[in-house]
Length: 284
Image: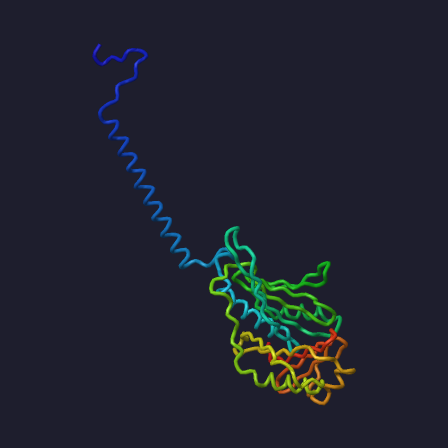
């Protein structure tokens, strides 16, 4: 009966079976560790060298300079009556279900004669960099500008009200990182002097210090806007400003604008108070 396995009996386990099983487990363990090391190395290399593939990979601090440069492009494209508005950082959004974030938006307000808003939007789209793929389309809410400033930063524009166009650059929700660093204002002596002159003409010489907003121009230099707090409107703001006006740019019920010493002064007449801004723009 030697060497014969009877029916119903399991074949004998040879002495080499446990050794083969242990050797196979060791091979699997080594392969798993090697794969984990390779995956970690590839991830490190990707983080170091590859561009971000989703918005959540670039923080607000990293996106801030992209937004600032995009605002400079918009100022250059919008023309003489463009003024910078203060940056806004909206905290409290969620990057993931477990991580808080913030969104940065910056804007440019452009004053035009009522009815010229779409023409202005199309002008801006035509002047923006070609790789932004800017365009204007008609929507139920009126003409809308859309563009891509790269790095997941979006550009939009539309009619805020008659005679006023709003251009916006937005990051969407992102990790905060070190936060957004507002560009330095630099020397704004000319803007503040011309602004003070306009306020005196309107009968409001005293008031808080103006708010200064800046952005880098695409060709070098800096766009600057000095904003004053709202002041009571005289019976005829245009007549009150006439003595200091050098080169009239706009005279409508919504706004009055002129140039003086390379500075554009815009008086927003649409509210109960007159809001005056003095801006130095960018060359188109």
